[in-house]
Amino acid sequence: MGDINPSGKLPFTFPVSLEDVGAHKLGEYPGVPRADGSKIVDEKYNESIYVGYRWADKEDIKPLFAFGHGLSYTTFEYGKATVDKNTMDANGKLTLTVPVTNTGKREGSEVVQLYIRDVKSTLPRPVKELKGFQKVKLAPGETRNLTFTIDKEALSYFDDTRHEWVAEPGKFEAIVAASATDIRAKVAFTLK
Image (cartoon, rainbow, N blue to C red):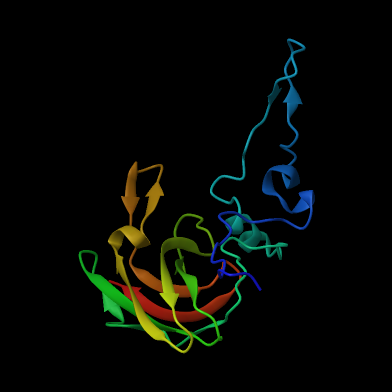
């Protein structure tokens, strides 16, 4: 082991193969050469909001390394996530709390990610959307409670026909994870 515990996390998803990438799967990559004979290629990206972990979730593809994946010389355990209320109104907020414990023998940092899932939406939405993250440094055996605030902005999507951000009333799920594929806790709540 090294002198320092690395605590970095991937800011993107590594696919297993090129066929697992949305632009390639949709026939958009490597693009079409321009008519002027130049080496420049015109490419279109029609996968819309489904890029990276969002594409992998939508197509149920297991990536080689998921968004947020990282290696460490220690281990972390996530406790039960709780919210301070199960229902919020459009102008309200709720607070999610999750305990994180360093269960290893070395000091280390963990990046705890918060995703939101809209259970039923009028418009297509990703399976889950990253809405927050926190990096916490813990000594061996140390536990810390992390809190995330969820508000209307975290639940909204842009409706291109209305030209505005919309937070539809309904059921949502807060997902606490160590990476896009390493889900540690889920909590359901409702927007009135």
